[in-house]
Image 1: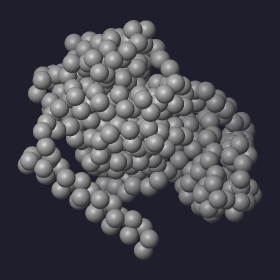
Image 2: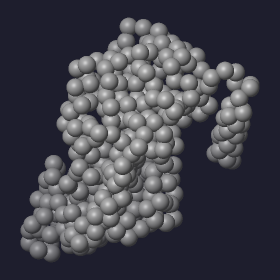
Image 3: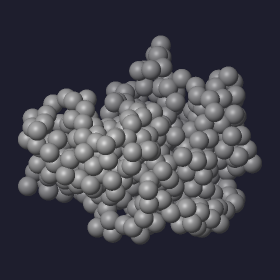
Amino acid sequence: MIAKTFTGMEEVLAMELTDLGATEVRTVKRGVQFYGDKKLLYKANYTCRSALRILKPIASFKAMNETQLYDEVRKIDWSEYLDTERTFSIDGITSYSNITHSKYLALKTKDAIADQFREKFGKRPSVNKDYPDVAINVRIFKNEATVSLDSSGESLHKRGYRVATGPAPMNEVLAAGLILLSGWKGDTNFIDPMCGSGTIPIEAALLARNIPSGYFRDDYSFKRWKDFDSDLWNEIKTEAENEIKEFDKKIIGSDWSGRILTVAKDNVSSAGLKSTITLKTSFIDDLQPIEGGGILIMNPPYGERIKIDDIIELYKGIGDALKQNFIGYSAWVISSHQEALKFVGLRPSRNITVFNGQLECKFAKFELYSGSKKNSGENKQTEEKFRQNEKNDFVKRKRKRI
């Protein structure tokens, strides 16, 4: 199977799948390849926080031109997956190949399936682009084609809890992936001082309470497959929901805009997390942190979709607030504005490249200490980790060159 995700999230998705029992796990660009049974397919859809969709490949072959593509697709026994009463859709993707147009790729695939059914049964299944019974994914890369069944249907970032959005809302899978990248496991306090419509605090609360990412979602494409096992599906849901737990730390989301906080409150309420998440109307420099330390993750404006008069001053203010108010916390900041990030005024101990949509971003970690770095044993350990990360990055780059 293939689990799709965002660039930069491959490793955390691989860890999630390994924890679920996947075997032969291997990261690829924007995805993870793995092996598993039907139970794992269902569990991956229901519980993986950093997956966008789960694909089940059914055929692969050379496709040097549209004739070869048509002939190879027609060789697949489509009656195993479809019948004349079911609907289907085709999602075509092509890159570095002789077939250059994704829509034409989808059209030739559709023709091959329809012609096979006409020949065998005298009629063909209908196409339904919006809500198909069977969603088919065809990808051609360097003239190598892979035909897969999309077990998810709508992207898995559509959790089902979001009832409203503010400007530039963060994708739920990206938010969950950032939390997983940070290493937070729900064992300390959590703060998002620029929470917008509440996506990061909600995903943190779902993780902390072990609530499945698909808990609020009813529809998956695999439920309309011919071999759908409803008993197995109900068993998986029951097992996962029996693992939901309470959370004894604090999760705080704040934003300067009371209007946006109203949106966040609606989403938190929809997710049933009012007792877990505290929302406050506050600027970051006025926000009082929770005693005992913890982690802070924030997604400030980049100056792209949300325009800022002076973005450098904004990031300077973020840095000042972190240094003055959040001693004892680890702070993570995601931004595509590389220049503005420098004005936070702190040296990052980690700097991970991720993508927010089409925007290449840095997800930077800042350790916030009291007193001198040189006199802190904890800080020495952190510096050693930073040097080790730099060493590991160097080794990775060297291996890539080799």
